[in-house]
Length: 374
Image (cartoon, rainbow, N blue to C red; front, side, top):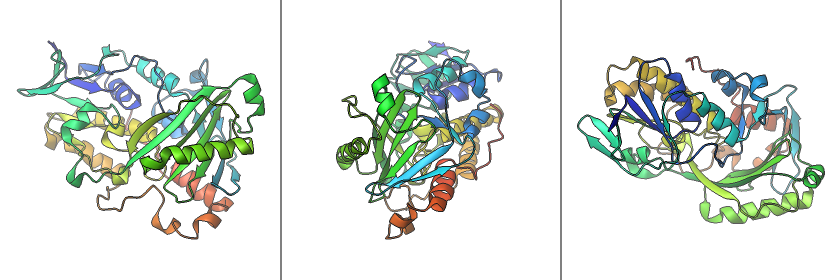
C-alpha cells in the first residue's frame, strides 16, 4: 500500500494546477487519471489572458510548437439571422488545443502520476481513503469532470435537480483545400445562439484546426440542433462541406444550477467535478483553474481535513462565484428577460453582443484576476 497526504483523481487543468500549486508545500501528492496523456479532450478550446496570467504561463514560450491562436474579434448571431462582428482592438482570448494545453500543465507536475488507470474503488479505511486497494490518503480530491468518481461519494446534493448541459463537438485538422475554402477566421470565433435560447453553437478556428460544436440543456434534441446548425454553416460557406463523421459528446453542470456539495470529511471537489462552469457561457477552464488555486490555499493552511476545516474552500468559492440558486427554474445560461421578443433585436446589436454577450458573459472582463499564487 502506498500512502500520500492527498490523492487527486483527474489530471486535467484543475488537478494539474492543484498539484503544481502544492509543489513546495511538503505534502505528498499523487495524481490518478484513467486516460494516458496527451489525450483528446472534448472542449471548444479557448482561454482568456486572465487564465494564462493566473497560471503564470509565458504565452510567447507556450506558443512555440503549440497552437496558440490570438483572438481579437467575435462573430455572434442567432441561428437563422445574420451575425454581428465586433473588433475588440486587442487580444481578448486565445484558441488552444486541449491535448496540448492539458499536457503542458501536467508536465509541470513533478510528483508521482498514475495515468491510464481508472478508479474502480474508493473506500473508507479508518481516517483514510483507500483507492483501488493500492493507494491511501486522508484526503481525496475530485478533479475528474462531471462523472468524477470522487464526486459520486458526495452525491448530487439536495433535491438532485441539477440541470446538466450536454454538448457535441468535433476538432480536426483541415486539408489545405478545406482551409482555403473555410470562411471562418482564426482570430474571430463564431457563437450562434439557438432561437429558443436553450443553448448555442460555435465555430473556433485555430490555424488549420477547426472546432465545431453545440451545447444545450435538452439532450434529447441535441443531435437534431447540431445537424441543422452544421448544414446551415455549410450552406453559408463558414465550414467545409466534408467533416469527420463522429462528433464527441460531453456533459457538465452550470454553476447556478449545480447542487453538489463541495467538501466533506476528507473530500474536496474542484473544477467540473464541483459543477463550476460559468452559468452564462458554460466555460469551465477559468473556474477549474481558480478553484484549484483556492483549494491549494486552503490545504496549505488547514489544520486537518475535516469538513469544517475544508469549508474555508467552499466559502471562498461562494465569495468568488456567488451563491448558487438551487431553486432556479431549469434554464440555459441566458437570463429570463432575454427569452422574449427582445432576443432577436438584441442579437443584432453591436453594443449588446460586445458589452454583454462577449465581454461580460464569455470573457468575464469585469472579474478581477485571482490573487492566490500558483
